[in-house]
Length: 207
Image (cartoon, rainbow, N blue to C red):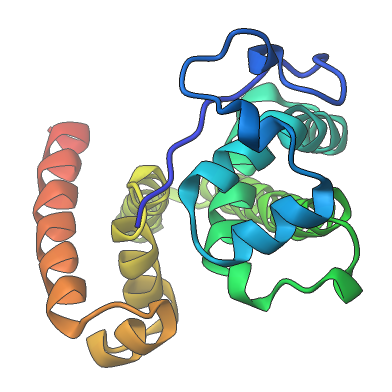
């Protein structure tokens, strides 16, 4: 299931600006204690994920923004955090800490991933600038890989996750299906459509 969430401004404080008058937000959900919300969230109701985002989306964004110093990157991290929380909800237990603490723990991992990704991109760009002309073909290949990595990053999940596991980790479709908990046919379908999309995008970029 793909989860799509909005993003609050980085200085919104500990609660989302959508708290007041937000369409579809149930008074019953707002009245849940943190413990009740955690218990309901684990059962797999997306309404409780939305309520978690309403309460702590701005907190996650603020933490990511302070760590990364870039609002666009921080907004990407917020999306990744709540998607990760949704996917791993069955593994949450109060012993792991409160819900906001758990979300901040996921945020820390996603921030580290983004910093490492930045470092890889910077290293590749620096390498490209220092390549001699005789290695033009190798430089072009590196550029293509960078473009490909960015296009895969922009794909929505699970399509982006499927192609990332296939391209950069060498996983087979059956391994990807097991890792993501998806039917094998679904994985193959997403991979095929994702490859068609990437081919079209690469043709646009390189033409």
